[in-house]
Figure (cartoon, one colour):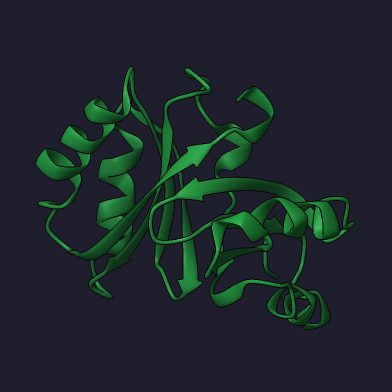
Length: 164
């Protein structure tokens, strides 16, 4: 049984992001959403795998592309609290035989709020916290990219639109 799904959405025009959020933000399918800056524009955490909702998102004005990750074990419910304004998502691809080892290492790092194993476009989804985004960037470059088993990762800073 799936613990949900991350839907990672990129828009061609960031001006279309607010109208998109206004259109889908109250959907019963979404358990959480964040605007992000990086490879994607919006990260939606969906309660289930409703393909009709994914199609609704893909029909939004400005939609460019989407990636999906089925959540195998939702570790977000046990997330470590931290400074809400300095967080980044990490979307990590691992060598098939290294996912568990990478997960175990990440879970021991204080800056990791949570790390959930997934299937699909990425193998792990984590949220990293730091005093500043520069601190997070440094941590990602110096520690996470170098982990044995990490093939690729994408970092997207979380933008709290309600706090701007």
